[in-house]
Length: 399
Image (cartoon, rainbow, N blue to C red; front, side):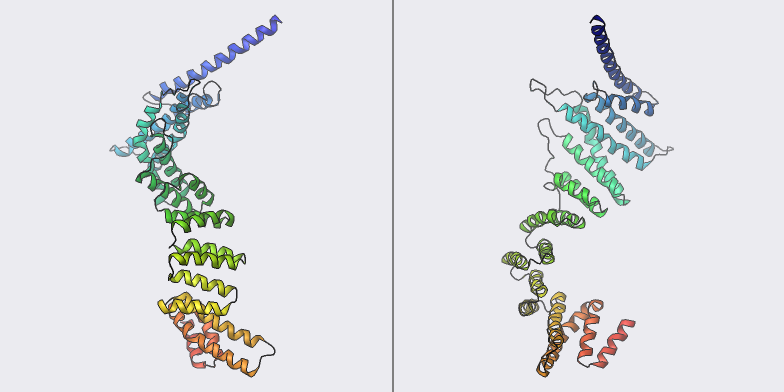
């Protein structure tokens, strides 16, 4: 029994000694960092051990030092860049200033915790905030630097680091981002960088944290919805589209995309209901009216589709979608009649009349977008026996 007690006592002493050793490691790293020629490899080794040991991995001092290492590396590189005769690395400077946030965000979290008596004991947060008041701006610059070089992953990391710096600089008791233009622009740049880089899961992650703070909310909602769709997640896209449609009813992207989803799912009634809601806000919006006509078109309700497209053209005679789609409606009516094996001479006469009705609309659409209309217009010329026009159309295609 005495041997067992002695063993336990020895073990406790070893654990205690190891904990003291790790705290000494952090202090040693601090001293090395303040030397004239810091050995950064040794400093990082000491701090790595401290971040994994029970006695020091929950100590704000450990992570204050982790962040301070990268801050010093950033300052060192900055001095090289601004001092004549010295050569610095801009990319390394920006990577270092962004990296400092990794240690300081942990220190911030630990410092803001309350003790068993409900008190907060601040030791390092004020120093971190003083550093970040300047370095946060450098993180913003880092994001722009990487964005300009099309390194979108680094740009996102930089902008989100700057956002974290914004939050850390808030007073104790406030643990959310300030509602100011800097926050709004940073959130927007983070989203646009992730989307441009096709980092679609990152766009969605960013939206969960920053959507209510970002600038250009209309565009932000569109980027997030497009990201869900790029991932094939229509279920995730629909709530964003619904919120976007409610906030920005005159932006047809939200209604149009939801309508496209419903159309793809064969839910034509839901699509029409959605368009009608949008038309209550903007009753003569040509884009919405075209979308309504398109729903009828896909449902092969030629009569209602014709009515809608004609209504659009009354107010917007050069609306390409209405022109082309109305031409297609007449063309499809004609082809449907001729496809019937029991078609009569009267049916053939009606079909020819439909081809004639399609012609002015397709010709007008051809002037606006030749490549998309050429084939269908050529078929109409051929059906009507307009050989000269048909040959002219072929000649234009060869030019």
